[in-house]
Image (cartoon, rainbow, N blue to C red; front, side):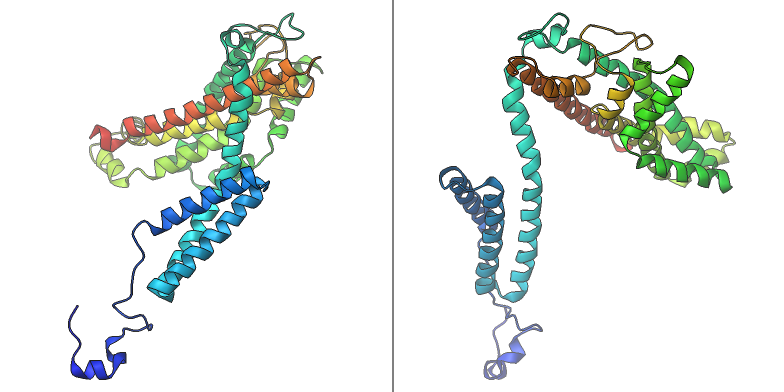
Length: 362
């Protein structure tokens, strides 16, 4: 910092930049914000545990106190401009932490109540002949995997081919109509997909029909727009220079798409498909209508009712036996298994994105 001259000492405004904040303004310690947040959170937890505060009230109070303290401290030391920056940062941080509270609450609740039945019997036995304690969700786990696998086999080819058409070939009214209907399908309620699948099969087999393939059709209606959108965005990210270089070598367009475009976008497409599977694997409403529930093993999706984890958890919770404890434990354990499956699918999506990204292969 240069030494002020005699004229600058006589006129301080010459040595003060625009905005009125001196160049020699102070600065908070480097870890002032995280340490303050840690102290405030600890005080809020103590107030919740010892003072009888509601957890939501304690969290909101902690956010307000932290924002006020960090703003006042910064304004006193660093000036109004830096204090405003820290105020906005504190607001964003507190909003993020408050948004995490429901997620943390769900995870803690499901873990605490679901681990009671997280044993070998739960994964190897069905509910056939079980009235009270015991039994498991083996039939529901297998039913979930079978139905979701069939939905994936239906959705991925249809979604990918639709996206390829829209990006590489689609022009005119047909492409606009397809895009419009994909947007509409993205927002339909899941119960509508279940009613569609049920109505379709009821026209062929009569009312009251229940089959696993019906659930797969219903889930595919929910998966297809997600696959189309994710694949479409990934194909748009492929540089046109790659296509033009292939065309310059007299390679046909279909071969360019298969050999150049799709391998380049493979990581993003695989990630989108995996996330689409994770999005539908926990659906309950369409499976209640189309698949129903059974207490026995049935691994044939074309013959009779099948059990799925989401519907199994629902029925165990709303229709517990006597005493209700074992049924509720099974319901929470099934919910925990679903959460673990979704988490694993998300981790697989991230792993695929890393392994098959063009930079990793280059």
